[in-house]
Amino acid sequence: MILTVDIGNTNIVIGGFMNEELCFVSRIATDVKKTEDEYAVIIRNIVALNHIRTAEVKGAIISSVVPPLNKIISKAILKIYGISPLLVGPGVKTGINLLVDNPAQVGADLVCTAVAAYNYHKAPAIIIDMGTATKISIIDKNGAFLGVSIIPGVELGIAALSGGTAQLPQISLDAPRSVVGKNTIDAMQSGVVFGNASLIDGMLCRIKEEYGDLDIIATGGIAGFIIPYCKNKITIDDHLILKGLYTIYNKNTTV
Image (cartoon, rainbow, N blue to C red):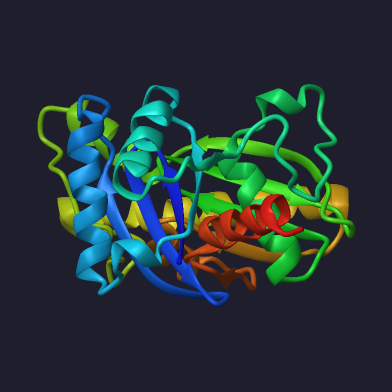
């Protein structure tokens, strides 16, 4: 069993691969205040709940956009399994080139989605990662990372809308029956769901004007709520980052 851990701003996603198969996926809230012991308990319990024995875990790899948690999660995994996880970053073999002004600025999550898109899907491709931020990146036919557009995420927009106004409530990510709402909830849901779908379609239109007609892959915790309402043909791969992590792990450990 190889543990793959994606540390995001909102959630930490943990996956377990065995014999090339993704056996389980769990999601926990990101909390920089938790100690390595607390995370050790959480990770150990998640793995045990999925009927994986401690001795079966042979390796681990982490991608992170929350630097304060890098050592904490790494030490937690070391404490449980006696394994020092591989951390995606400079010096780690990924198999792709980062054709940007400053490769060191490219987030580990973007690297992982690019690796997975190239190895599990068709290239060239557009990758949409919908989490705390919505990131739209591009890889060329060789899997090289060409750049990204970063947009405030859907849930950030909802929080700003309800938190910055006196009378607008928190809402769920359900699509209303009509684009034009006849009550406050429907009106907000229309703006959030259809508005973000239209934003993505608009960005895809502009990208295609520059790069041509490419395959489009979407991932991230929010993708399933928004992508079905886009007018472009988009393939949803919920576990793209975990697949990228597993691929990178194998590139760095296989002799």
